[in-house]
Length: 65
Image 1 (spheres, rainbow, N blue to C red):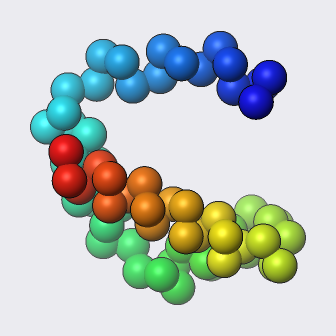
Image 2: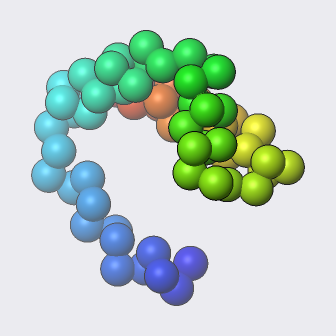
């Protein structure tokens, strides 16, 4: 949390249409591709499913804007 406290500004000036477009682009990634991305990033294998679930949830939120 302490490391992210200064990141509140991120996204404040991004137009909704642009954020929705990004969600549509990211939504093209398959579940397997997201898993592979975290594997390539050397994330702990026992935590990858949780990370992918969060990313997929955030992609859904972007698509609903």
